[in-house]
Amino acid sequence: MGCDTVMQSSSSRRARQSAIRIFAQEYMDASLPEEGAGEFDPSFVVTKLGAKINRALVAGVIDRIERREGESGPNYSGVLRDPSGTHRFSVAAFQPELHADIEELLHRFDSGDRFLMMLVGRARWFESEDGGVFTSFRAEEFCVVDTQRYTNWLVETADATLRRLDAYEASIESDLTPSALQSSGVPMDLVDGLILARGHYGEFDTENYRVGVLQGLSMALSNNVVIEPSAAVESPQPTLDDSPMPSVTDSEPKPQSEPSGDVGEVILETIRLKDEGAGVDYDTLVHAAIMAGHSREVAEDAIDHLRDVDGSIIEPRFSFFQLLPE
Image 1 (cartoon, rainbow, N blue to C red):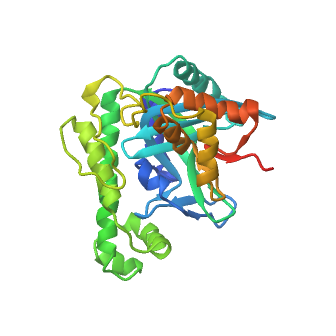
Image 2: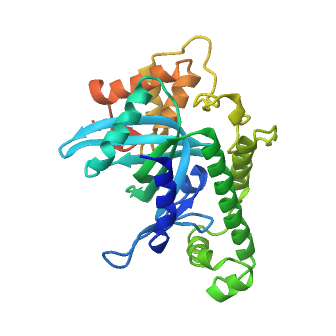
């Protein structure tokens, strides 16, 4: 699928729901779904900054693609990594028009290729029994992009995020009514989302989102902006001029010189310690294995083996794992 088609599709839907540019951190933090009132009314995921996400235009380096066989045919899941975190996406069995394209990308990924990808996706969420909300996208269009197009997306997404940050700050001292928010300088298209977000999330520190904007702009401009470490930043961010395609391992922790313990036991013990009922996410398990001295490839193979061969762990939803119930 051509990249121009993806970009045009994100704009041509404005009569329906436009594809909002958003960094992964803001979307991952969202926990407020809004269901459409009628059968054909759109549903949204509302972020802390008041973005109402029905569709989004996201981009990043490909971190994972998998195919799974189901009763209705193959389905696919994947992960894109931008400077602030990861976007999870899926291609369903009932989307056969996308299967040839995603198979091509899967083949490239399995051969060791890593590339930048842009995707228009519809917001999806899963609510666990304890009330936790986990977000992802169902892909509608996607394509491989070059660094220039990714740079443009980074700048546009940083600009959109700053606009939401400014609107949120303007709303802090305002009454949560449409007229009061507009009088405080909140753009009309953000008023409804901010009323919902403020009522659900309350006030919070926006520093992580501002750091994400700086990370994105630093990568886009290929400069040496130094970002002070915070809860969301543990290592310097790469720049696009380091290589034609950013490496997915640039920011990974360095393993010990010698592995400590069996990688399978590391993963099982991590799930035992960290699973509070909703499962433990894939990245946490890989991180634990790397910190124990194992490579990322060994960790990924071990997760697959424990799930598909040994059967000691299950994946009740995409990228979250639990021990097999006894």
